[in-house]
Figure 1 (cartoon, helix red, strand yellow):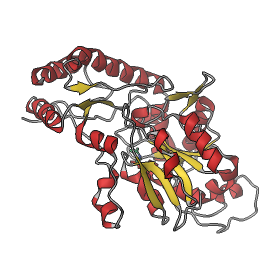
Figure 2 (cartoon, protein in one colour):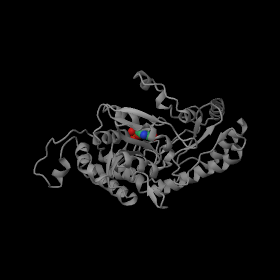
Figure 3 (spheres, protein in one colour):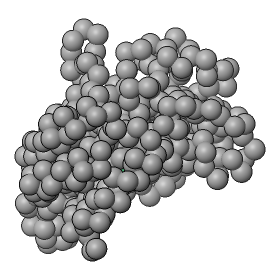
Figure 4 (spheres, helix red, strand yellow):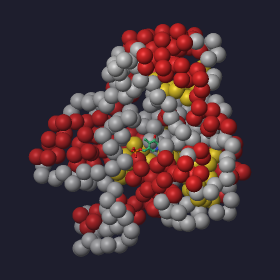
Length: 382
Ligand SMILES: *Cc1c(COP(=O)(O)O)cnc(C)c1O
């Protein structure tokens, strides 16, 4: 059976190609031009991010974060084991020892109640991942970090247009809370530019240096603003900024962000409603959005009662041309982590999500009728 319903399909929202043409005609297609500026301003205004830097990927933004925090050999960085490899790699590249935290029992995000026992004198940072765009319990994490003088990085790769509701009842955008945050515009995310990402600097102390690291370790940006009379090699850095072609595409998406988000939420809610009744059989559990979080419809997932059940559903859908997938393989069980002579960790909840979480197709152009069909097929397996 060939695939009729892919897991993901990149969506062209409107003016992406016109913006790319306009960038090319303007005679400037290297980075940090008009479209980069438009994207930065959009994010800073809408989400109260202090300073934004588009990057070529979220992976790049995480590497910038590790450079800015001056992570060096011997430093420990705490993060969930249930995440994408880049969350860890960026810090491993700087020589950090990664300390994995388990997921919550009710959500794949990190269990904040298990954080304190992982902090040592060598701990430098906590990296949180808002899985499926659903906030971690940020008040308690920030409080702990402040108490131990640790930096917090939000890996907000899933988290565009999603919020944390703080203890005062105020909605604050994910990505605006940590000292640094990173976003992804990879084609599998809600808002895309093929490959693409962004570093958000919320802590003023990092602003100036972030710009230099972004521009290959030079003060080129200050030079173009006329603040220095020549530009020089002033620090370490790399080529982290994307071209204007990428930024122009991204701008075409951002212009349509509300429409994209509304559509995804509509599809997400339809899945939830269709599957609610079936889930009562106990074969799988639907996702939970805690009171302090909002839903940005990045991922529709559920947790099956057994790995076998998951395989059965995947096979059933596949036999009908529908692709459902799972992720992540918890990093504490990865060949790379094990090859480094780390102790065997027993992270029960991360393991549950590794073995039993299933993601269903979710993209702008998904027909609502397909969701009925998927639900019926799942119903036939229970
Ligand atoms: C997608 C993703 C990344 C990496 O994003 P890229 O833009 O592909 O580098 C990092 N962390 C998480 C949690 C992700 O889902």
